[in-house]
Image 1 (cartoon, helix red, strand yellow):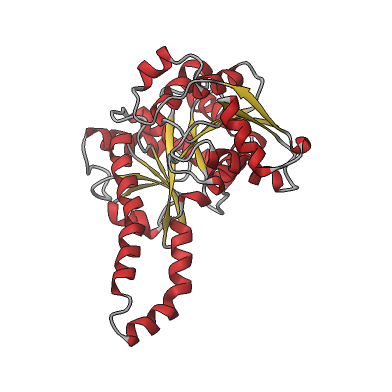
Image 2 (tube, helix red, strand yellow):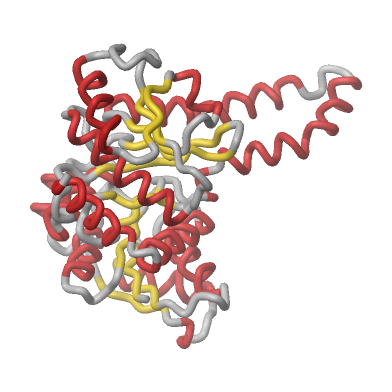
Length: 335
């Protein structure tokens, strides 16, 4: 497999991105080729720091421009035709690579992927999902920002795409899907929620009905569906939870001997909780619905996160997730 990696995307690029590429290649199980897309001089300098032999299958494609994290996606894509983001997506469009991974400007990646790769047949709107830790493991929340305003059929498709992704990459014995709402009753919520519930009830396998905000961290379902506006708020709130808990934990250390002894006892459990809440463990998530593999990473991705994002791209290809989405939507259209 050949994966294009945006070497200039992210808060710690190109250092963290190049490090991630080498971490991925050091795993002897992977014999894939990584194409680092970015300013050749900067990327080569980072590669030299790792001192790895040429047979590690890491290549460089020169792209002299970089799209900043705060730039307007539309303006940047128009003005920066030689950006690492656009060149990387173009390589995927031309079938020179099998996937594209970036920790850069999410809006620009979404726009570039949609414009160049197009949508899977039958998909109305691509969506982004994210994993959130729960009492029982993890839950996949979709959409988390790609679509602020939605129609019922969009939420149905988010449920289909999200469930297929989770089922193939993180198999569950009996996948459960819930619609995020303000109550469990079918008639609760706004017009969108009520209509989406009725549509999902008859057409989405594994749908168990509405779930409330308090159910998110309980792990009552495996996939949660919502519009991007709501999903983004939930995601940002969830990301702040670990930070607040960690700061509170540290603030209370040193108060007295008994607190310090207690801290030592709970440290292993706290470390495990931090690991579960760490985005690095999940690497990145695909832009579901585009006719290709475009993996979106956290802007603050480290080398470890980039390595895991490359692994997501590989599994997306191996499991033929896009093919399964297309087949399911064709079946849905006939129903």
